[in-house]
Length: 106
Length: 245
Image (cartoon, helix red, strand yellow):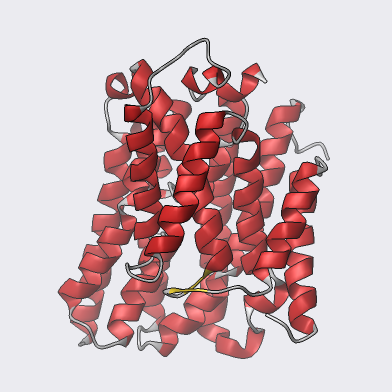
């Protein structure tokens, strides 16, 4: 890929990605105000967040793996069940994964 | 700290936004190093990070370029992965209520993390704070660390060694946790886990998240609305939903 082609690729793709983001913001509010739509939006939020947990916790490229992230998520879930504050949950998860990897696992 | 707002919900939103920004921003090191290694020079690497600013799309684009793919394939892959940001925009736009240049700026920082923090807040004011702190925080730190990664390469080490991948997963878990009380939310969460896990091996990154969202739309359409049911809070406007707890 020549330098010019590379730049054109980068700029066109960036423009397309921005247009997609802006398109969502420009959806008329009246479309979203309907009771059924707001109910679906709430469920979509749950699905998106749960899906991000699975992707971020179990995906390694296109493979599903069990590594140090899984015990870290278990520690995070326990901390959440004990009503630990957000930052503590995140730090405990990072420390668990980092600790296990320092010991040579995951 | 006197820079924090006095309202507890707003303070919590700021704290969440900052922790998510740091964990996500540090990942920029990986992108910067990988992008330069894939043959994308420093200039285009920084242009991607500043202008595209969507991690999944950025990694996909340099992946196709690094594998000697065509420009059309690179653009198509990055765009497909950016499709979920349209959904995010539609979800956060009613919470933000901004116009003009602020709307253009809000669109640019509409990503996984800013949306996740915004929608997890108990009230609209905290949602707005969470969105902007996370969006701008990730933007600044992500680009700073992409530059560092592109310049220093692998000398800085792997963010995984610091457990930052687990920190990001835990952040998303913490954000969804308080939303899992209604039975219908639990059903959707279970289906989202199955759909995501089933698709990860077969489709490009970013698509499983869209599929999970599609499952939620179907559940929302087929389950009847019952205002007196135990899960009635999720029939309330999403911006006000958490405040009923």
